[in-house]
Amino acid sequence: PRRGPGGGCLDVDFAVGPPGCSHVNSFKVGENWRQGLRVIYQCFVWCRTPETRKSKAKSCICHVCGTHLNRLHSCLSCVFFGCFTEKHIHEHAQAKQHNLAVDLYYGGIYCFMCKDYVYDKDIEQIAKEEQGEALKLQQCSVPGLGEKYPTWETTKPELELLGHNPRRRRITSSFTIGLRGLINLGNTCFMNCIVQALTHTPILRDFFLSDRHRCEMPSPELCLVCEMSSLFRELYSGNPSPHVPYKLLHLVWIHARHLAGYRQQDAHEFLIAALDVLHRHCKGDDVGKAANNPNHCNCIIDQIFTGGLQSDVTCQACHGVSTTIDPCWDISLDLPGSCTSFWPMSPGRESSVNGESHIPGTTTLTDCLRRFTRPEHLGSSAKIKCGSCQSYQESTKQLMMNKLPVVACFHFKRFEHSAKQRRKITTYISFPLELDMTPFMASSKESRMNGQLQLPTSSGNDENKYSLFAVVNHQGTLESGHYTSFIRHHKDQWFKCDDAVITKASIKDVLDSEGYLLFYHKQVLEHE
Amino acid sequence: MVVSKMNKDAQMRAAINQKLIETGERERLKELLRAKLIECGWKDQLKAHCKEVIKEKGLEHVTVDDLVAEITPKGRALVPDSVKKELLQRIRTFLAQHASL
Image (cartoon, rainbow over all chains, first blue to last red; front, top):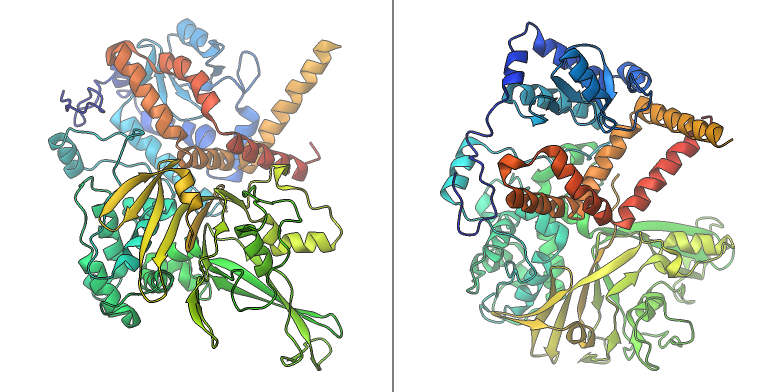
């Protein structure tokens, strides 16, 4: 047996495995043992048809006490079911000298002579086939489940690699893997800050580190998703020296020409361009699903970042509502002090929704979202033909969230380019660590209109709750400045990424920062 | 009185269990729970704990039953409330759809 200095690994020789059980070996001498085992698996462990499920439901009870709750096992030598925890199956085994039993929940084989579950290659192979077959049939009713977390089955080359590299890494609270600086290649902090935010997006990280991208681009060296894959590998390699993202920059220049050159660029613009290119290069990842539903892309970028923005235009004459839903990757929010109208909207009177520090005079992210989702009068100069009364009328427009994305990006419109002036708005906006999007959902508006009581957020409904995991900041002026980001590492550690330099930060540092782009991820994920 | 109530409970349990198996819902719940527990890191935590126990006792001196007895309290305690809540909700919905039970 080998054991590395890090010692995360048990003293098991991977290639040989534990020694076999002589009782199983003598069982395997018997005729048709495979067939018998398969019948038990198909009828009582992993059913394939409604009929077998029905008979399983009826017959899977203990032959001694009639219950089903106590880890039911089936004798391998005769027709007998018994409780394991109540030792009914043990009594049977001893009385009849039947040494082996099958666990009817998980399919494992227990040997009463060895007094433990036993592992046999042939039996495990049969179990794997039977379970796989049943799961495949079940997939039709539960798409996505099961195949999502396949067990890693080591192949021979992998076993050799494991043998040659006996050191295992373990996650501890002082684990720094994933924290790696990025060299500035000439005003490329706009890119570095976004790369740090993206590489610390939990689900995106899981996707790339589990090697899920299958490139279908004609020339993979031009694929931005492939480059993201290698970027993730670099950033999570444990190498402490800063990474030089020249290849990424090169691909950005090729695929998003408006960002080419060494001038200063907008980090938000880069984020949107990067998501767009990634989304286009992802096409190969789910050809099957895309073919079924051409309008709805299901690539990893859309799965994570796409939300649905509902726009309700209400005719002021007939009150008819026309609704459209558009996909969105981010939400751009107006700030107080900008030239746009309808601001301020008397913040502070209502109780704070998201527990933001409500210092009088301070605007909160919730205020910005409230303003974003308020009905807006479109004015007399913008009459729209109403679909219900067929006449040109004044109308109001209201934006609400129809579907929430897994990761919500908020963009504060700090750079103002209006006809009157070009300037940066540095107003401080307070934002919370935990955000509840329930008030901004179209569904909550409907329930409000139906007169249903809007419960406060403490009602325990977590499905619309988000946690902050990255903040991008801009220091300086409209003409010249610098981007940095705060990223969350582990559950609650924060770090500041300033190009090549990464330093520890406090939650206060994060929440007191000005904020340009905020990244929140959903706390609860739904399985379809 | 007490006995008849217990019998009734047991009967109800058995009937619900039968329905869950018959419809395949039991397997779906199992898969959902498995996915949720992997997602929240429960599986990794328990795995690490199992390894500690095995290291402490020595591979040759530990059976699956020893391991189950040792880690069950911790395993139960570590299941996040949100996961329990979701499972409970699904079972409730299932029961409401099969109210004839």
